[in-house]
Length: 169
Image (cartoon, rainbow, N blue to C red; front, side, top):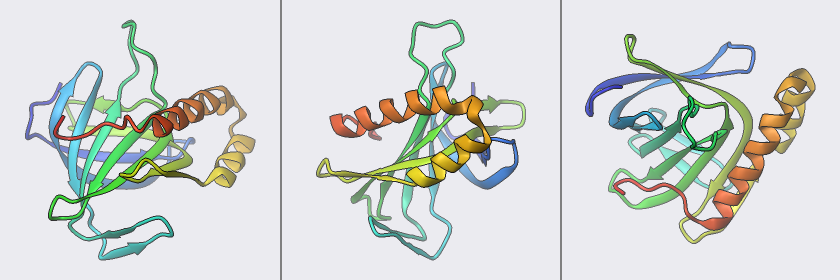
């Protein structure tokens, strides 16, 4: 495991293993079940129909590891709690994906993104994004269909419950 305050390089991968995007964060918590990182948005402005992201927005990123013999369920998603730089909560960006993998020697976290996303607002409303991209991905990678369907169902249940992870807890 990594100590609180340790730097971590995050690698978002495509199903074929190719790098899609990378950024740096800092460990807030790390245990056998997963890791929570803090990162800051590093692009000036990104406008989406559901939210606007700005440089300096704070992301608390919740990643889950494969259970590895524990009784915990496999979580085929990760969740980013996103706030303005002043700490005001914007919402949660939830990514369908394979469980994260941590290389402690390299201080590197990687996960395979499965295209589908959910944006959840603080008021409990949410929107499912990129369903068409998931369908295309599964045409190319039919071996991921079962985990994608399970993860999608779990992610929608999480969004509907409005019981999304929060930092600090």
